[in-house]
Image (cartoon, rainbow, N blue to C red; front, side, top):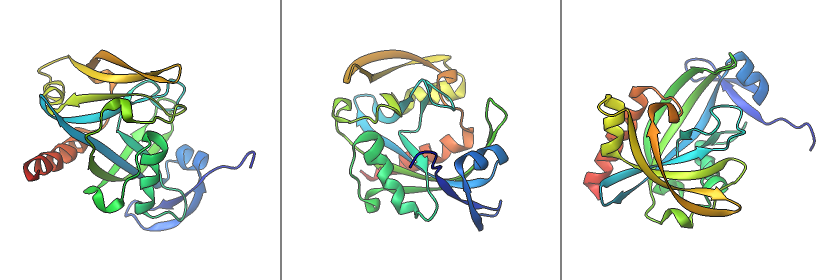
Length: 211
């Protein structure tokens, strides 16, 4: 319905639910809320790679930057398991929750460019998907491209050993996914704490050894 705003469950800093609030209020007041985040990975010639989505250039936060493969807020009343809908909506993947690898709950407290504060309890997962990038079906108003970045190159970027790295991907052009190559610097990524990436990489390395 017109003017309807999505409601989120809100929490205190200890993770105890204390009520609900609309999206605008949540971000204006820096209220704690929950998100579902899923990093997709596969193995290519250079070894394990992580899939990054290219955010739409008109997004209100971090437009045009590379971010988590798939992520979204959990609406009021939703369980973490319901977050798998984001994979279908954003990427066209129908995934059973049981096939996800849970990395943990990560607390993220960021000040956005406009002064708002984004306080999230992030439910972080990994999912292996070996399909080619051209087979993904992107939600055009949210995601305008996908890029695979090998872990070996990411580690060079994060350690400061390289100021930029090459990444292969696809971008949405006139309704079609077109292969592209890009040079990626740290400034092209949505900022996450080093400890966040360490959480992902630790579980990914364990997953690779278990394959």
